[in-house]
Image 1: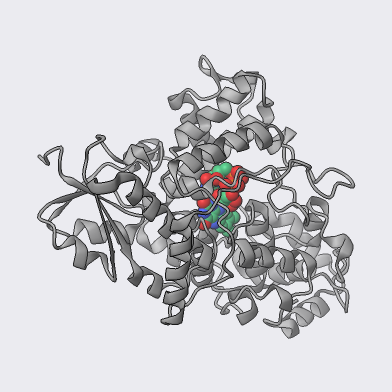
Image 2: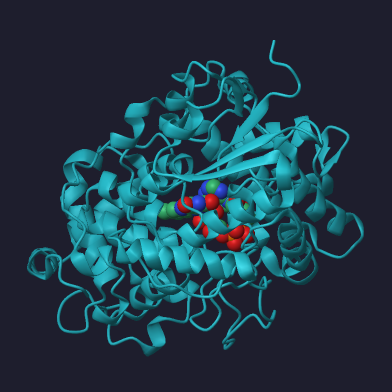
Length: 492
Ligand SMILES: Cc1cc2nc3c(=O)[nH]c(=O)nc-3n(C[C@H](O)[C@H](O)[C@H](O)COP(=O)(O)OP(=O)(O)OC[C@H]3O[C@@H](n4cnc5c(N)ncnc54)[C@H](O)[C@@H]3O)c2cc1C
């Protein structure tokens, strides 16, 4: 048995009060700069993690050993005994399990432990999000009236996912929560400048800190979202407006993934707003589905699938990421949606779900970029990027590299979808209706060219029967494919 006073070693994504068992427990936080050398992270992601760890160390004061080192091992090996909550990635968990002086204790990252997830998977043949989500709602009693969902329906997607309001330039919700930087941020910035001079490579540009890094900031961000954005969350959750990158999204993935907020408290805050009559059911249900459904499901899938899942490549996609994309060179791109989204990643390390899936992921899928390289790119380029999020989202959902375990058909779409769900196409030099020629939309042409390429693997997929029938009828099929072949990896 580990005594109650054993020092608890916390990683940089285990920073809220719920990671400790008592108000006196001693803590170890190790800032490993070796990690920054191994991957080319977004500069703002590096800032957020270091800032969050240093703020936590300052809060904990003398009971926290805060050590800056090259590797974890050199620090951890100098302690007789430590305990550490279950790590949030497989490599980190393997590393910790191999340390003789560290005992692993239960984690506090999600409302679903790996054991819970295994209970749910049982002998199911397909892991449907909808089934998991209902199971979560029931067992946590969220938006329930007895054994039935509040309002009589589990899923209000039908009321959500609308295009942007006609003629609107923004949703008019004002600026999202912004923290105020302090001396700790200034010191982090100086250190990152120094590391960059010493050869550590970063992606993207530096910029003002936009996300919560302390518990207090995280709670403020949560309240600000519930008050101002949650009521509008549902209807336009899939829509994009060039002048309103945040729309009604919460921007809570950073404090959630830093372990500053527990998902159940986030869900409870949204449910309370519904109970008070401050937010409609469709928006609250849509949001709860993201946090209690999708996030927990993605977490469970990461642990449930073996380590080999992330190297899946069912569509035999082997092209490298082109330089302009890898380097977030938005200025090299003329297609308005892709240029704007890439600029969002470069400047802030964050764009919402649909730009990730239908602009970035869709473009890569259409061109057959290597899913493992793309996974690294997402992991490194986003301020909320972590290994566990990549498996289901990038490998499964976005690139269909798991052969359809996550999604029954690939998330590929042409320019018509982007035109319906955004205001990008109006001001673009490409036309979503045009497949061939100077004004051919790269997404429209890319969609048909993608179908042409994956026909051998996917022609038996019943959900693609209609698109493949359309492909067979396409008069200019050869010209489209040839044009896309000639485009190669040039920026569109
Ligand atoms: C290709 C791709 C890559 C992604 N990469 C990441 C990533 O690196 N980190 C990350 O946290 N999310 C990732 N997501 C999921 C989702 O896009 C982000 O969680 C979301 O955009 C974060 O913004 P938000 O906090 O405003 O989310 P909101 O739209 O306000 O949603 C609320 C919360 O729900 C959770 N959530 C919703 N959908 C998902 C999902 N599919 N997977 C996990 N959590 C979800 C997040 O915690 C989010 O904060 C990715 C999705 C795709 C398609």
